[in-house]
Image (cartoon, rainbow, N blue to C red):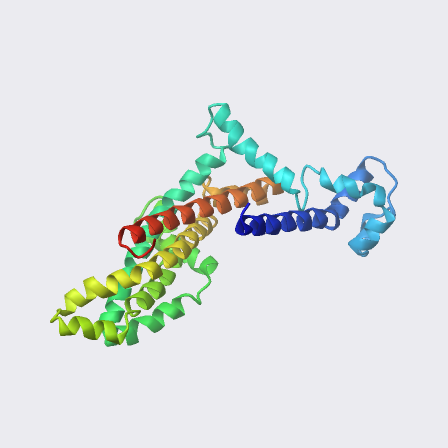
Length: 311
């Protein structure tokens, strides 16, 4: 086992241990309320009195009920095992039963979110690359566009999302796909823009002067030097951008009243008081983001290796 793998496993194990330790104090009040309904002896017996006592005192006074917090149907904080079981129930079991595209399947909801993520990522990446080229080529555009691009990121997406949805409906755009893609691209374009600007400006003055001595035109200098030099920066930005696009697609599903998508599953889980559904959707989103970032990373390695920029 390599040192990197060992380090990753150590971190993951630490997170799981801390998670399990946090379950007891987070769920003790729910566990005591449930035990009270079954007639068990609780100290203090009144729910009102328990609200004014710290969880640590409640745990010390009701040690026999601490274990109950690890097996609740609707825990405030589920255990990793419970989240894993819910994920399997809404993915693996659905596949085995031939219900992959059932509306109870997270694979189906993940696919709905992934479509908006893809179109938002495509739009945001295009805007970011085109904007970066314009900024590098024109000082006037840099002075006029870059400040607004930076300011745009100070606007909370949760406040902007409903506005985009309302404006889309006002101009006659039906459905939820376009607003979600637009929100997704809003979060995606900025890291691509900044990374591409940094990459296009990464060639040194000596490298640019060398091409000038070969009588290379401005277009040739741009295509032969600036673009290849920008690729490592671009791919790094794309990894950030694809994760941001996924977040944007999920956030875009929340105020639209969507019934499909990972964001919709989170919203429905909150409305119906099913924390396990929320946690399963969150982990499904995290897994999906990891897969998307890995795909871009593999594409980066293949392209840079073919260009001779990586062994």
